[in-house]
Structure formats: structure tokens, C-alpha cells
Amino acid sequence: MALSHKTRKRLSLLLLLVWLPLYIVAAVSIVNALDRPSIVVELLVYVVLGFLWALPFKFVFKGVGQPDPDAPRPPEDKG
Image 1 (cartoon, rainbow, N blue to C red):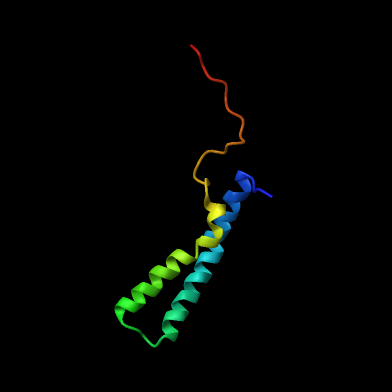
Image 2 (cartoon, one colour):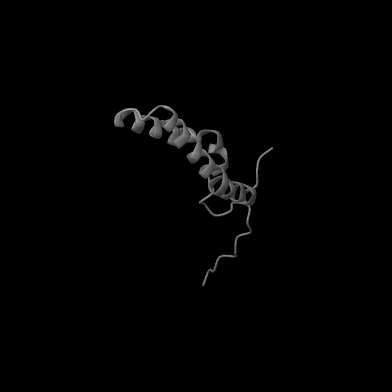
């Protein structure tokens, strides 16, 4: 089932306001559990985790910044 544009906008907002902060807390906890690795390893872990959070939700964010394709368009002026 395809999500409507309005539903995708709302879901993306929910993901950014709720899921992302929880994910950040989990990522910092994972790095803290590694007993302070070298700065290169720590940076690599943050970069990898920074990309991984969005992969499952790629379909939600796709096209959210664009105008609603299903919205009625105003008539064009030919004057």
C-alpha cells in the first residue's frame, strides 16, 4: 500500500522528532560501551550509524520536500 503525500510528511516528522533522538542516544551508548576507542574508530562508528538510521525509512522521506502531486492545481492564467 502506497502512503499518501500527507501521511509521508507526518510520518517523516514523527521519525525526525521521536525516532532520531532515541537513535542518537542509542548510538552514543554504543560508542560509550566500546571504552573510548580511538578518534578514527569513533568517527567511523558515528558516520556508519549516521547513514544506517535513514535506510529503512528511505521510502518515507522520498519526495517529502516536493509539492503534493495529488493536490488540485489552480487554473493557469492565459492573460
